[in-house]
Amino acid sequence: MNAPNTQPFDSYTKFVEQIVLPRLLLQPNNQRLDGQSGEGNWDVAGLFKHDNAVWRAHEDCHFEPLLLAYYHEKYHGEADTFQRTATEKSIRLELVSELASFRRSRHRHMYIYLAE
Image (cartoon, rainbow, N blue to C red):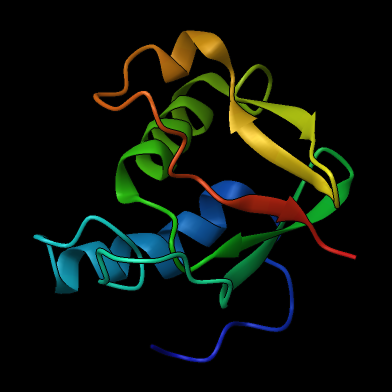
C-alpha cells in the first residue's frame, strides 16, 4: 500500500475522496482498504480532521461503513454521522446507531481513532 499522507486531510469527505475511493475503484472486490481478509492491520491509511480533532483511519477498515459515513456527510453535513466512544487506550469514531443500522454486518469494521 501507499505510505499514508502525514498531513491530515481537512475533512472526512476529502480523506474518502483521496484515499478510500481510489482504492475501491482499483480493487472493487476488496472488502477492506488493505485488500486483506484476515487479521487486523494497525497501519494508518490516512489522517483527517473532524469535530475539532485529528483522526487516524487504519488499513483494516472496511469500505461499507466508510462509504455510509461518506455519503451521509456529503449530503447531510458533518452533524450526526459519528459518535465518539472511549476504548481502554483511546477514543474511536463509530457510526451513529441510525447509520449503523443500515449495515449488513453487526461488526463495526471501522477502525478510526483519535490521533495523539
